[in-house]
Image (cartoon, rainbow over all chains, first blue to last red; front, side, top):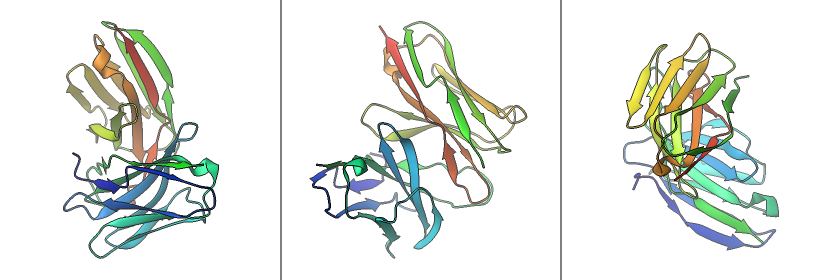
Length: 116
Length: 111
């Protein structure tokens, strides 16, 4: 157990639907990252939050949104789902967001989304 | 724009052999990370390399960093089946600490 908790582990839904993925970071970590991993795209960075604020955006579609709450858990909302959104969605957390030293990410087990 | 390239992307090898995975990056960075991912599983941090010439070893895996060549290597010694996984390298882009990831090297070690 990495300390990063993601729910649900598996989700099957239909095209056009909306889902919410949840992530609780490791205790003490202030940064939360969301990644999408599909077979043909590798690991794609979506978005990062630090202590409730958005810090960086990657290849996140407009149909997707995220937020980090005061208790530091984060949610990734995926709407108007398409077949191509089927993927493994990882949340990762870390202590820092900048400065010197390392920024080691701890990953959750992932949420596998299947869009039919 | 910082780009990270790994090669090979796929490697099938026999147990007991040695091999090296390469990670090249395009602009200056002095923080490089190696992660391992077992099939269908999460990513696990293996090594963090923070300076030129840094070398880290754990078991049959050894990682090194040459910041002047913008190159990191992950060397596998006397491979065993349990090391079969996908290995990712990542580099931080700037003080914002965004990690730029390589495409991953899928390693299959046959008994």
